[in-house]
Length: 251
Image (cartoon, rainbow, N blue to C red; front, top):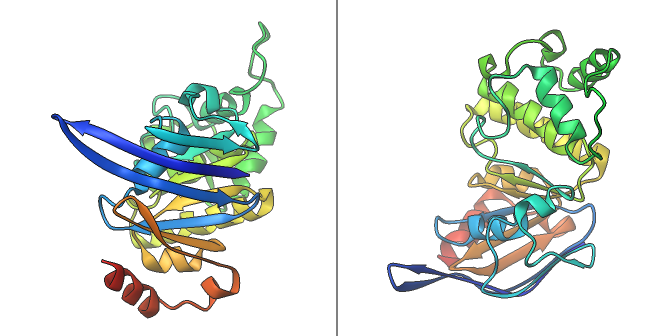
């Protein structure tokens, strides 16, 4: 589904070359939910930005469903990729209502016409959609989204990012700015959406417990290289203590 062939990314910082990713080779199958961990500077964000189209690799190729997207910019990949960032403010238009944000997300990849984008039966559709979150948001369709809590906004952003059934969902530490209880709620909603839609998903996280509890594959990065890759029953049997030992041993 996703293939990274010999991906290298080098940044020129004040004439000092920094290798952020070093000859990465990675294949992610359709429907896999991959959690990615690693220390600061390990290459997690660079990997995320290369797949999403924010960066281009210095060397190598990126394929999504056998389509070469290596040189496609973010706006050219938007129909295939859903993205949720760490900051709850990033994924929504704060001065627009909940339903307006959802409608814009729903028509994002559809052919543009001169017809009015808001329909009378939209309310019922989006109300039922919000009910799936179990946060009571179905009663706040016309409320400005900027007045909602960070957790509520992230939950809505998840809906927006997955409304068009993208080929790939990218989650960039999307619960890091939330309190533990809210983060757990958003992660459970994430897991529910990913399973129901069978979405191929990559989730970057600093939380080892979350990396183990969610997804069916775990990848650890260090100094721009994949140093640990585990999935299936092997991942399920892995404990936090073992993962921490692995992390410290590699460090």
